[in-house]
Length: 142
Image (cartoon, rainbow, N blue to C red; front, side):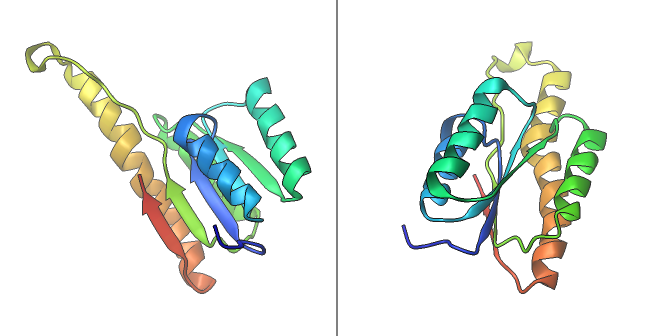
């Protein structure tokens, strides 16, 4: 991967799986990170501290629940308060729901759409305005 020194990458769903690996790769490449996840855990805090120490990058943890629009707004306000130029937004967070159609509850479908679509739209709209004002960037939807 090319150098991402002096770049800021914002990643949702960064506390496990693909998001955690993306965070690791960008830290190795020298990027500062805004790592978004639902809640703070000791495992995630240890991961953040290790990445920052090992690669000398700044990491800004941000916690909000994608099922809760007010929580998202608070998280976005925190990100905006950092006053950073965001070079890349990676909308990685998501969830699945597997059920046979006749047994699928509408409330479950609404929850999936809130997390996988509406929350990502809110995040993209809010951070895209920052990105546009500071010269642009890239948005990746997983």
